[in-house]
Amino acid sequence: MASLVNGQAQLFPGADAFLPSSVLRLASTTTTHSSRLAKLDFSQLKVEYTTNPRPVPAPGSKEVTSHRICTDHMITAGWTAEYGWANPELIPYGALPIMPTASVLHYATACFEGMKVYRGYDGKLRLFRPHHNVSRMLASATRISLPEFEPQALLKLIHKLCAVDGPKWLPRDRGGSSLYIRPTLVGSDPSLGFQVPQEALLFIIISYWETKDVTPRAQLTPKDGMRLLASQEDMVRAWPGGTGSAKISANYGPSLLVHSQARRSGFDQVLWLFGPEGYVTEAGSSNFFVIWRTERGNLQMVTAALDEHTILAGVTRQSILELAKERFSYSSKFGEEFESLEVVETKFTIFDIISAAKDGRLLAAFAVGTACFIVPISHIRYKYEQIDINVNSIPHVSALQKWMSDILYGNEPSAWTDVIQEE
Image (cartoon, rainbow, N blue to C red; front, side, top):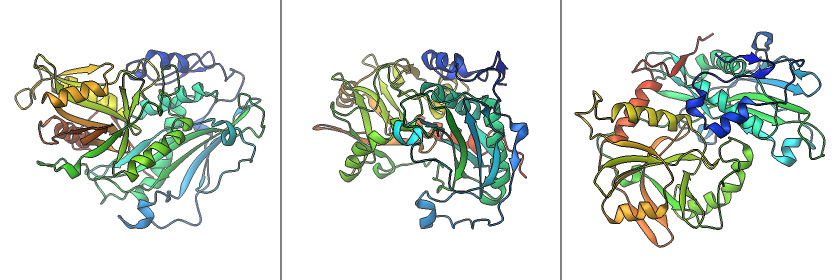
C-alpha cells in the first residue's frame, strides 16, 4: 500500500521493479508538498450525481469512433501551494473552470495516465495493475513540478468513478469490452509568469472507446499487422535526459506532425529512432518489441531499455516482459508448446533489424500499450529499405495476446487485477 512518510508520498511496493531508478528517484524525493498542507483525501469525497444522464452510444457508431463521448460523471480536485489539496468531488461530466492565462495552456504543465476498466466474461469489472499507473503518474507530475499526491488516494478515486459509471456504460452482458480512463493533472495557476505552478487541477474522466477484438486468431494476414514508417534523423520523439520517460502532454503534440505524414503515406504509426545510430525507441506512443535469432541461432525477444529517459515504462510492456520470462523459459510448464527464448532489454538499432531481416533471422515484431493492446508488425520502411515481417512465423505473439486477454477479462485469475465493487 502507498503511504505518506514525513509528508512525502510513498510509492506502492513493486514500483522499483516497474519504474527505472532515474524515474523512481524523482517520485521518491518530491518536495512540493509540505507536511502542513492538506493531502489528497478520498474519505472527503463529495458526490453529486447527474440529473441529466447521457445515453450510451451503440457499439460501432460514429459517436464511439469519434472518441468524444465520456460517461456521466468525472472526479475533480483542486490544489494550491497555500492550502494543499481541496476535497475531491464526483460531479456530472462537463467543462472545466480554467483561465486563459493558466500555466498548462502556455507551458504545457500537464501529465496524465492511460488506463482501462474491463468487463470480464464472468461479469466482473476489473482494473489492470493500476498501482503502476498511479505510481507512474506521481513520477510524471514531479518531472514537471506539479504537486505530489498519495497514489493510494488517486487509485481509490479511480475505483469510485468506475464503480459509479461502470454498471451503466459497461453492462454485465458486455463481457470482453472496456472503457478508457484518463486521470489528468494540469497546472491551473492563472499567472503568465514562468514559474512552478501555484495552483493545479486533478480530474479523472472515462471515455467511451470502441473495444478492439483482442481474441487471438490461428492465422493472420499482413492486413492484421501494423505498418510502421521509421522516423528520419531530423525528427525525434525523445532524447537522453529528456522527458520521454514521463507521461506528460508535451511529449505528444510535437509527434503529431510526423504521425500525420506517416498516415498520409499509408502507414499506421511511426517507428521512432534516435541519433545517427538509429536507436529504436517506440512505435507511435507504444513500446516496441522484436523477436529474432542471434547470429548464433539463439531465440531472443528484445525491447529498448529504460535507462536514458527515452522510453516510457509501459504497464503492458512490463507485463509482457514478466509473462515472457515466466512462460517462454526452459523450465516453464509451457516449454513443450513454445521454443524457449531469452528476454533482453537493451539498445538496438534499425540497422540491427534490417540485418536480421536480410539474414532471415527476424521472426516477429509487435507494439504493446494500453490503447493498442498487443499488435503484430507486418512492415517497416526505413528510407529505401522495405522490411516485410511474417506475422505467422512463430506462435509467441499470439500466445502473449491470449494470456493477456485471459487475465484482463477474468478467464485467468491473476493478482494483477483489481475487481471493482460496483454501485
